[in-house]
Amino acid sequence: MKIFSIAWFSFFYFIIVTPLWASSAVVLTYHRVGEDDIPTTNVTLEQFEQQLDYLQQHDFNVWPLSRILTLLLSGERLPERTIAITFDDAYLSVYTEAFPRLQAKGFPFTLFVATDPVDQGFRRYLSWPQLREMKAAGVTIANHSKSHAYMVRALAGETEREYQQRVMGEIENAQQRLMEELGDAPNFFAYPYGEYSTELMAIVKLLGYYGIGQHSGAISAKSNPQAVARFPINEHYSDMADFALKVNSYPLAIAQQSIENPIWRGQHAPQLVIALEKSVEGVAELACYASGQGRMDIEWLDRERLQFSIQAVKPLSVGRHRYTCTAPDSRRRYQWFSQLWVVMPSPDL
Image: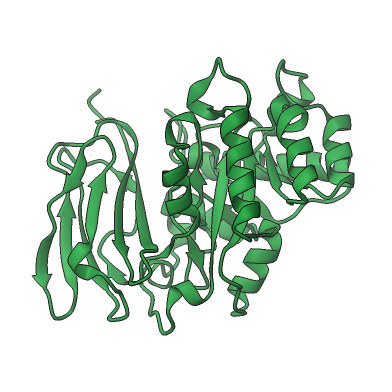
């Protein structure tokens, strides 16, 4: 998209000059709480309560996402164990189950709302009066698009200009509805399905929003403000040991990476070349994984420069995937990096 020819170098190639554990945060994203008939996007009440108890018992600083991003991206340092809690899609169980439990703990959170289901009164979704009640209690209500449309590529027969107008309309119409119903809304946009492309990030940046993803990992001042990482939490990824590992993680210090755009159309799996900063501890225990395929071989291209290559053995199926690399530091806290891939179908299909 020619009108968005932005210097993406600054988004994906960066220099780390201080240890990332010194000022980083973890953002969690949930969808449903206590809706046991939909396990793929749900956490059970028992799991949710255990997780909140863990954060409280281990003295985590549970802050609003807005506060974290404002401080991080202005270069200010955060205390260790800083975390934000978010929810996507405005399901009713956020109001009936999560909201009272979070209030009881004094934990703030952010709710990303797709406005059409609320406007249309869909079953198992929140209403505007409930959202106003939550906002009055201190909950941040933010933009998750108008219709939760698939936004990472143009529709069949859609021109570049039509695509841009559709995406802008999804974001701006949702923001207008939030403003009309709630009085104000922050400049946050959570990508539907957590998927984005360089073109979509450019639109989000042009409109003046932070872009919030669902690829796993912690965030720091060096994070791309149009691709803010969050750890997705559901029933299948709610083991307490796994939860503790994630909330105590911090970003793996990446100096360079070879591929910018998460969109992948190749017949084989993408090869990703990464150069680590010298500050990375535990390189001997570095491990990288491809979603659905397990651990990948690491090919060291230059050990002195900490440059390596990873590639899944099998081609990635159409849809959303991740490459994830982790390394433990001397305190056994994990440094974490995740690369989103959105694999497109072949034009011949």
